[in-house]
Image (cartoon, rainbow, N blue to C red; front, side):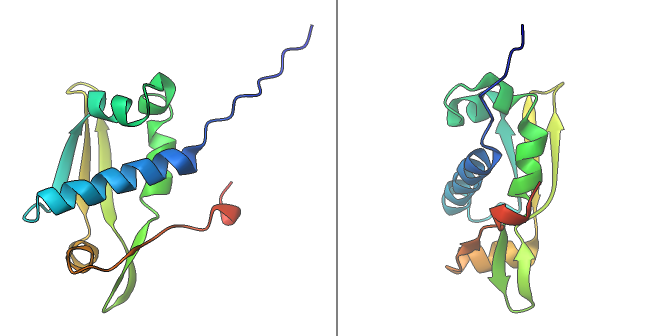
Length: 118
């Protein structure tokens, strides 16, 4: 018997959801230069997809940290560093200050090219 799995997680969709969540967070907290999200909120954001909010979260964040914002110095990554803290059930995100300032000034986020990722 051969079982083939047909479900493939869409990391790019979940990365897009994280980025939109970050955009909303930045709009609500304009003084923030980092963010801490409870993993239960990420679980809800991902429509209760437990695998994406736990095991696959690092892969999703690897894509999310490729999103850029146009700055005076060229396109810069919005996320400078992230960490998944399982002990405290949280996702810690540090922002690139130039990209964050440009985002606050109305610049658009530039998504990574999905065709060049493995």
